[in-house]
Image: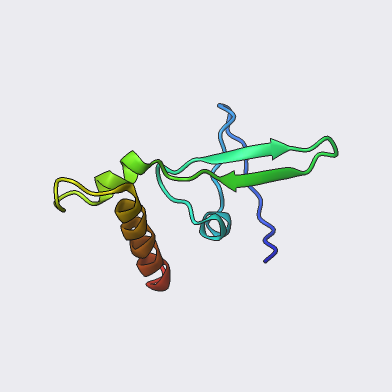
Length: 87
């Protein structure tokens, strides 16, 4: 998939990732991205993995003890459901 999108830099050096880029990366509010700048000027944007502690917070109300694998599985399932629903 190729996406071409632009963004404006604010006076504070901030940018807003266009919605097309956020969707392609699967990121949303609170998620982090990393930028890798190549010598030739190309920039790679990489979505950082969500920390397990944040995933556990999404599962509030479940059993007191939950494994990391269960937390990750539930978060992935929730993300897939949101993606299919077009959010």
